[in-house]
Length: 346
Ligand code: SF4
Image 1 (tube, rainbow, N blue to C red):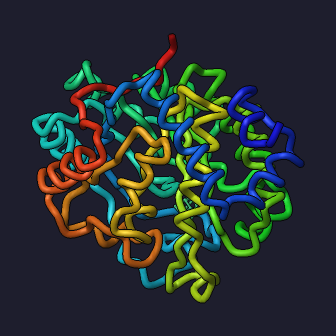
Image 2: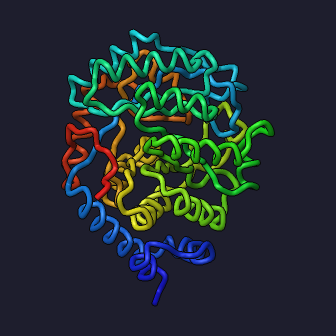
């Protein structure tokens, strides 16, 4: 039986087999077959619903220096900002009125946000919006810190592992960061009962098919509730300024594969996909994605959260973003819903 059918039947392959499958990513027939199965599975568990997450980029300070990232601490050209608690709450109020029932607080690893400060913000949002889910995306912290934030009310945590391959991890990150710690964080988050999101960049500099196969095996092992993948896009103020961007097609292929290996996963059609291809998010939905993440951050700060070049949706108000996405979602036969959008457990 060919690999595609084996994956569809068993929802798993060996590392070597994933590598072989990835070598066929350019084959139209295989791509179409995987996308067809991915869509069948997402409809089985989620019907025609697409969930929205209101993204609030609340700080672009970061103590880390990941080589691919526009807001890494080593970039002196970033105009840094932090939103005050009131500004964050204003974003939530605006978002709630627009129908968002999940808020994602995303920021660099900013030491200003101690456990106490962060827990206070989490508590306040959960008190004001008890029917909403709150997702944190604030990087690597200690078990104790994750515990405090979970107890304060955080429901979910996004922490892309970026690559599960040690050698590739070393190419993308400075010495003081380790893949082991990243994996430890993800395990801690699972232990604490968060709905966990992992994920990786597709086409980051020097990445091989074997390394992507390793990412797929890692996802199988971790069993995250969410998986965020997007094509690598270079940023002009990083050591990878001249590197080639990742491929939209390979990202779409991997979205379908991930839907099949984790059928109930929440898979965003990412902004990075929409940046590389004007129809990237629609194509993501057609490849098996079921989540979109419009930006709720104040327009005045949007351009400062500059992770990679030419990021889209930095000029529109949140309401415009939501309407635009609702139209895009409808254009491919799905509908944007006003729900928390938890991972399907049945
Ligand atoms: S990728 Fe995240 S942790 Fe790394 S420098 Fe950028 S914001 Fe900081």
